[in-house]
Image 1: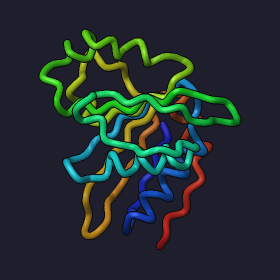
Image 2: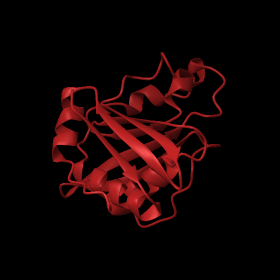
Image 3: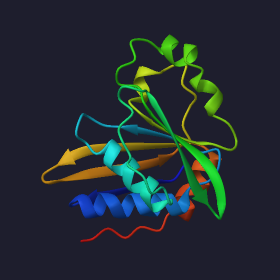
Image 4: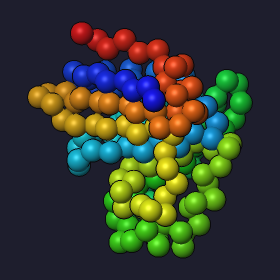
Amino acid sequence: MPHFTTHLHDEAGTNALGAALARALLPGLSIHLQGDLGAGKTALTRALLHAAGYQGHVKSPTYTLAEPYAIQIDQQTVELIHFDLYRMASPDEFLEAGFREHFNSTNVCIVEWPEKGAPALPEPDIRVLLSVSGKGRDVELQALSDKGSQCLARLKFAPNL
């Protein structure tokens, strides 16, 4: 399966990658964001949401666990649900909250701290690995399904070198 790696030198690089991902999204896509605290998971999601047309404040769903947003994909309104599972005590909480029903052929689901929801959490189409590196961050996007491969094939991103 395809993958993509890059180094983001600063916040502008993170915003540019979020915008590129917004342009490559497909309905039904599930993206897992993995990385330590401060690695840029929420910043990348915020940039993606704003580039996809969401105008309001994007907050981390650390306490609510999930925040829904209406975005545009190819002139179609799609619901994107941003999950943050950091505070979940067990995968059973994911099931009890009814979150699994959001993973379908029409919604886009972005999940921070997916390891907290395993094995109840559906497998991702794309895994994004973020790590702090110097003043920036290293990023790897891994396609794990046909839909994920389609998304990465649509990704047009040139890092600022």
